[in-house]
Structures are given as structure tokens and as C-alpha cells.
Amino acid sequence: MHFASFEFLIFLAVAWPLWRLLQARAAAGLRVPALLYLLGISAFFYGCWQPWYLLLIGASTLIQYGVGLALSAAEDPRRRKLWLVVGITADLGLLGTFKYGNFIIENLEAAAALAGQPLSLPRVPGELPVGISFYTFQTLSYIIDLYWRRIERARSLLDFAVYVIFFPQLVAGPIVRAADFLPQLQRAPLDGLAHFGRGLGLILWGLTKKVALADVLHAGVVAPFFSDPTRGGALDLLIALWAANFQVYCDFSGYSDVAIGAALLFGYTLAPNFNRPFWSTTPMEHWRRWHISLSTWLKDYLYIPLGGSRAGPARTDLALATTFLLGGVWHGAGWRFVLWGLYNGLLLVAWRRWGPRDGGGRLRRLGLMALTFHAICLGLVFLHVEDLGGAGAAFGALGRLTAPSSAAPWGLVALGVAVGLHATPTDWRERGLGVFAAMPGWGQAAAVGLVGAVLALFGEWSGPFFYFQF
Image (cartoon, rainbow, N blue to C red; front, side):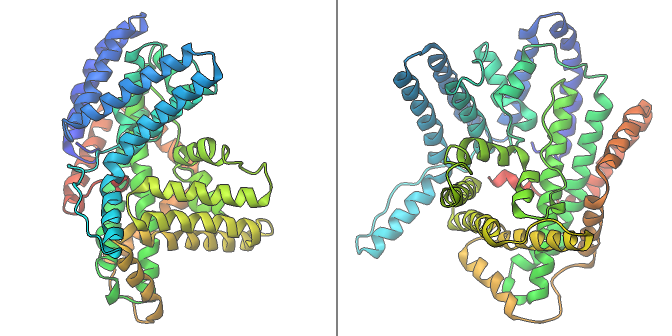
């Protein structure tokens, strides 16, 4: 059950009215029934993907809650460090087994074959569990923050379980910190009716970006080129990369809008995850504006512990490169993800050392924005091909100066709309949400019907959200 489906709209139409009946009890101090309800509908939502996923997330939840109890009770520094290692090992062990197990096995077999000692090892059964990268980072941040005494432990296993499995952000973020979400569970949720208009508006806005822009960009421009890069030339590659950057932006920022809106319907707030990243004049600024919950997670739990900018230029370069290399590995099991992370890490190192600095007039700023945008675009080749051979074929298009031929006209129209959407001032969206929230019920119902029609109209191009693969 993904967000851009009629099933999800039906799920909300059933789950939210029942939640309204429980909100009064939660406001009166009866938290447990409300939290049990959130846990139940979230488990149902996640179990609709594959029921066995619930066993995996349940195991992770129980283990890390237990580690959290041990950490909060321990005073001896060595014992606390031991429990931290246990928690990190358990989390990364589950993630490594199900996300990277087959990749590691395949490379071991390849290395053995090169050494003349062929191996045939068993594979990890099943597909990659949806959302495992996101909830693993949530539980990791919880035990690390407990270790550094930045937060108090979860009040109960129920609180912690809802924090981990809360359905709006479970599958693809935003990555939620315990420090931000657990206190919300200890108070009465926001009045869902008072925030209904804004929450519903965010959901409809996010779905429209996903279905009418991201999916159309993929079907009309991105897929036609990357399905066979050998047929295109340099201009085809350039247009495909422009479209790919805006496809991922509309897709993932659309998902984040739906997640934030759905959470608001149920009385909880999630932090914004995007801030017009293509206005950035340096790659560093781009990553501060893009997938903010992941970028800040990597900064707080990898970059700073590795030394950050405190230990000299060489150490800073190493911390940057290592952080983005591991960020690339987090995105997927494959050498193309390793190269994507390495490319972006080295790009930041090179820009920090020798890149142009911000400043000057408007024309210079526009030039830096264009340079940054295209530098980020080049790395997207690794995320849109199946293997390294496909990446080589895509980059090979740079040597062919032919007229562009792979992009469909309607895909180019979607690209123009996406560019215009990104360029609109932020307060325009806020005004639009305010207007929508003030509309009478029949007007909001008409908007739901209109988005439903869009889902049906563009259904032939519909696909899963881009970050589901991670």
C-alpha cells in the first residue's frame, strides 16, 4: 500500500474518523488506547507490503528498546559502551543481512572465481524489506543519543514501538529523531480537526507532484534514455539528467509532503525534509537543503564523530569523503551506489578546496547555481542505471553530438512545469495551504476527487516512490 494509490486514500478515510473518536480520550490523559490504535493501524499499513516485515521491525524494536533500558540503567562507562556496541551491532547486523547479504556473497564468489577456487554460497531469501534503512537509522539515533545522555529513554515499550513504526514516515522518512517525536507521544496529540485542512492539503499536493510530475518525467524523459544510453547523444544525456534531478525531487519531496500531512492529520508534526535545493550555490549547501533528515543524521552521527571540521583540513576532507561514501552504501547494495557516494564525497572535498566561493552579484550567483546543479546531476547517472556497464554507456553519450531524440514532448512539458514549481516562492505554498484549509468541506472533497482523477489519468505511468528501493 503505497501513498500514491487509491488503497491509501481508503485507508486514511477509514483510519482517521476512528482516530477522531480516540483523540478525546487522549486529550483527557488516556494515552494508551490512542497509542495502541496508532500501533495497530501502522502495523496494518506496513504488513500490507509483506506480513513477515512485521517480524523484522518487531525484532529491531524489542532489541533496541532493551538496549535503551540497559543504557539508561548503567552508570559504568565501560558497561554503557558495551551496550552501545551491542545495539549498533544488532541494528547493523539486521540491515547488513537483509540489504547487503547477497551483494557481499556475490562479491565473495567473484573473488573466489578469480583466485581459481569457485564457490557457491546460499543466498539471503526474499526481497529487500521496505523501509529498513529508515527505521534502522531511527533506532540507531535513539540508542546513540541515550549513550550520550542527550535524551531520556522512552517511557514505555508502547511509546518506543509507535516511534519506530508510525506509518507516515515509516517507509521512506523523513527520518525522525526520538528527541523530536517521543515528547509528542507524552502529550495529547494536536486537534486533528483543527489541522485537517493543512494536513489534507499537503497530502494532495504531494500526490500531485509525485503522479503528475515525477512519474511523467520518468516515463517521458528519464526511462527512454537510461533504458538504452547507447542510442542517445550528449544532449539526450543532459536533458535526461535535468529530468532525473527534478524527478527525484518531485518524487521524494512529494512523498515527504504526504508523510508530513498524514502525520498532521493524526496530531503529530514532522520536520520539513526539503528546502528548494536547486537554489544552492555550492554542493555543501545543496545537501543542507536536500533530504534534510538524512543529511543532518549523517552530519551528527558520522561526520562530526569522524572529526568534522575540528581537526584540520586533511581530517575534514577524510570525514567528508567517508561520510558520503557510507551515505552511498546506505542507498543500496551495489558498486554503483558506492561510486555515487564516492563521487559526491570527492566533489565536496574538491569544491571545499578549490571550488568557487559564493558572493558577487546576481549573475554570478546564477552561474554558481547552474554549476552546482549540473555537478549534482552527473552523480545521478549511478542511481539511474542497472550496473556499472550502464553508467559507462551513459557517460559515453558525452562523445556523441547528435540532435536529442529520446525525450517525449509531454515529458519536456513536465520538466518545464517542475522547474517553474521549484522557482515559486516558498510562501506561495503556505498561502495556498491556508486557502485550502479555509475552504468549505464540499470544496475540499472536490479537491480530493480531482486528485483521484489525476491518479487515474496518469495511472499508466505510475510507479513506486523512488526512495522505496533504498
